[in-house]
Length: 171
Length: 185
Image (cartoon, rainbow over all chains, first blue to last red):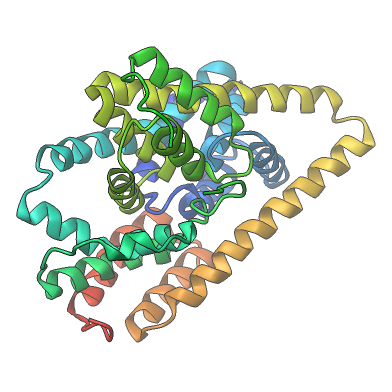
């Protein structure tokens, strides 16, 4: 047990939650720096062990946070670290999704959806099915599409995720 | 083709995502979710799924967590979203702690320690592959290359705060991408 409050876990993980664009891998280096070098909650060796354990277990790789919390403060720590890393991004996602679904079918919604092309094309490539491209395309301002495409590409560049091409994804 | 499934209830959503969470060794969760939710249960349409996937990928947070929230919300509103994300994380939460507990008991055995070292090496290798692929893709345009080098130098070499670097370099890089005319458009 440590002297500093387990709430320190929240202070460390909440900001990472909100910048983990592209998924947990993108903030792994930052988390390591914070928990090993800055707060000394775990040693570098322990961090690698916990990282390996989180990878050998089911679930998103970000469950590493759960293990760090558990390692230092037991169940309270595990719960706080998990909430810290998952709750802020989840609430943000929930708010965005609410707006997103409410405006489905509107012109700007369609434009955005088309603009997110790179992600969709990638998903499509994984499926290796030809029928998607035959669908009638609604006209969309190419400028919007290109700009949004750039932003999406950036997100993919910061931390590309290989999750959508799983084994056993047989269609 | 499967016949349409009965409409999703909150407990069903929870248990479907609980199962997906527990089965998801080594990633690839989006594919499992697609199979279960679109192909087998036909809860949502394929293009709704892809739209949700795109949203999940640009927002911060684990992509699968965001995707679960999207699907849960689509099916049953706020409670559906909570059931989906709760189900997805509940299994892995206890599983990782269980694994860690077993490891702490068995760590004195030499082959357990060696085995975990092997897992660590493999896992780090996989992250490295993703990083290298990303690096290749991230250095195609000059401004992306600058953002890449600055981020790497600041976080990797100078050990600046990752948060600070993302908050500063991220928007600048998006801005640069915004003003760049893409070659294919």
